[in-house]
Length: 214
Image (cartoon, rainbow, N blue to C red; front, side, top):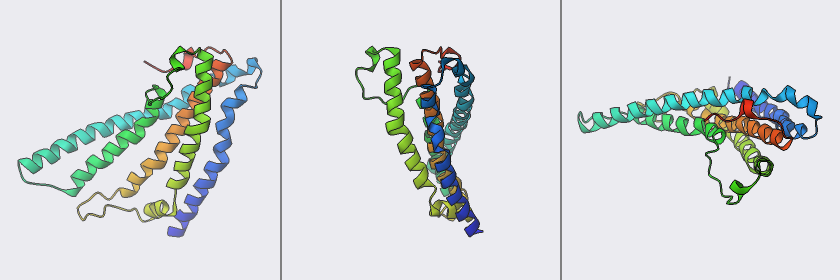
């Protein structure tokens, strides 16, 4: 069974590498004749469904974290009770909240920016800067995270359904580790959406049908 999972993990790595040229689809839009651009107008909306679903899971994680934190506080200070599984619920749900909501922050343009001239630039200049940033920083870093995350130890974790090291901990540590590659995939997906938007703006196409929601 372990060998099967190791082969599967290696296959996922090479599958990701084979699919990576799809990241250059937005750049192809810069060269396509204008009449063909309409065929791609709905693509950003379709891709963003994954970001919206992940945000719903992150919000659920926030509620679980709040409930678990209240349980730990009441149990410790009123009943002098504690359990590793309750503390791990807080850790896992907080990780889920951060890692699953990161793509939504990118969608809402809430990530930290260091450029001080962007607000005074034209729409096309902003789109060009966003496009450069995505291809120079976001995509390479996320691909590196994804490549490093799907390691032999990660695959063995799934093969063994690895649980907590604590005797009364949660038996889902392998799922906890999965949040890291999922984080990278979600950011790549939303980054592709942002790249599509930027290329449409550079081509002067109306992006209102798939603009960020308020």
